[in-house]
Image (cartoon, rainbow, N blue to C red; front, side, top):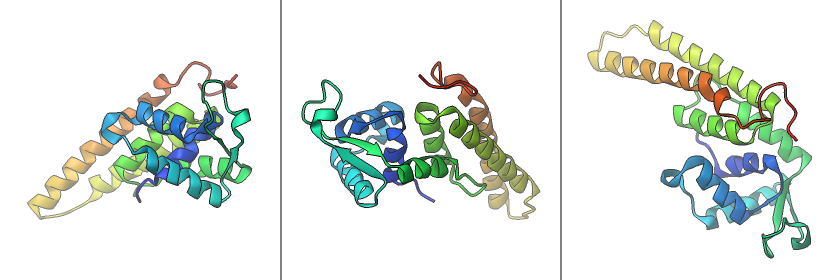
Length: 179
C-alpha cells in the first residue's frame, strides 16, 4: 500500500477550508523539505478530489483574509468520512512509511476520536507485526538478518506511536473538544 497525495490532502483539510497553496504549505510544514511535493501536484489532487465529490471548492469571497483570490477547498460529508476511515485503516501489512505518514497527519489534523482510533489501530498492527517476525523460523542467515532488522524497526515504530499523544497541540488531546 502506498500513500496517495489525495488522501494526504483530504486529511489536511480536517482543520478547515484551505486553498491548494495553503495545503501545499501545510504539507511541507508537516513532512519537511525531504518529502516536499510540487504545488502543481497538490492542485491536480484538489481537482481529482472535487471530481470524486470528496471536496467542494468555494468562491474566493469566502476564503480567509490574506488568501487573495485563492479558492478554498472544504471536505464534503463523504470526504470527512473518507478522512477518518483512511487515516485509521492500518493493518500489520501497512508499510512503515505509510504508518509514519498517517501518524504525522493524525498528530497534525485528526480530531481526538480519530486520533485515538488511529493510535489503537497502529499499535495493534505493530504488535502483530512484531509477533509475526518473532515467530518466523528461517534457516537462511540473510532472511533471519532481515527479519531481525524488521523486528527492530517495528519496535521503534511502536515506541514512536506510544509517544505520539505527547506531540498533539493543546486542545487536541483525547477527551477534549477542539475550539
